[in-house]
Length: 373
Image (cartoon, rainbow, N blue to C red):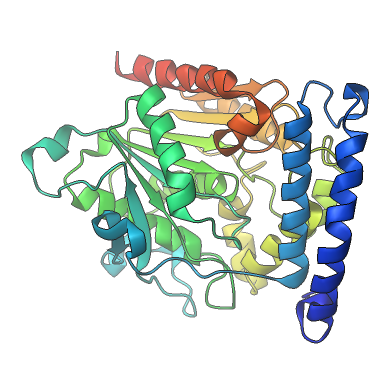
């Protein structure tokens, strides 16, 4: 149920109250964080504490007011790097991806640092990362803002030639709940394959809710009747692996939740908007929505990362352990980074943990490389 503050006239009252109290609250916290012993994590810098707290306030504002921007469907300043991917034939969607009320739809993404020229001779040997961004299934980040950093990281540490950042449909109504985002992941993967890139040269990737989606797509490719080939590898950074109807309470009870950037309200909004309305579909879809305690066999390497100072750490580590027990260490690698909060892939610079992210990605690169050699 949406908060009372998300509808007018109460929404306007909340916005005014938030704008008045937040600067004062942040000013007080900026003084409180001066002594290192009072910081949420004593090893964090004053700047990191301030930025994480500011981001947490903003996420709370978005959750309470239900502020949501629709995904980008026009090229904009991305120009020729933007692609509106069209759904593949219906036989690529089966099982949980075929509810009558939710149909595949065109979705947009952007190439970084430049677009691949489909059908050219050099495409076949390009190494491509297909990345799904986070946002609790309800928030869209500007791909032009986050894409360059993600692409630079993938090129520098994984030797990727190109990264395609794919914005799936946000959960905003009955026709965009699960499995809309997973349908979109199939559409994006099919599009990348259609450019001529070899499946073995594609790495699925995602952070937070996008990490959940990367895992769900990997599961679907293994267990469905789809004719799409398997990619070369998959990565999930701080994946949201425990998505339940009580997501907010689950998060708030988690270790590190008070210090981490996320909040129970944003996750509860995401769960309320994303979970299926039909109970029968929810039972069938549960492993795709909430992979914790639902491991699956994989024929390709899966790299999973979490920050040791994030509230998702215990659930992500447990999921990785379950996958390792089923598949062995040659197929699954878990990497935890000390003092890292949620989503180190995007938050490494404010935390001063860029070197630690490089270490994690070097681990991923070596892990993937050992599968080939």
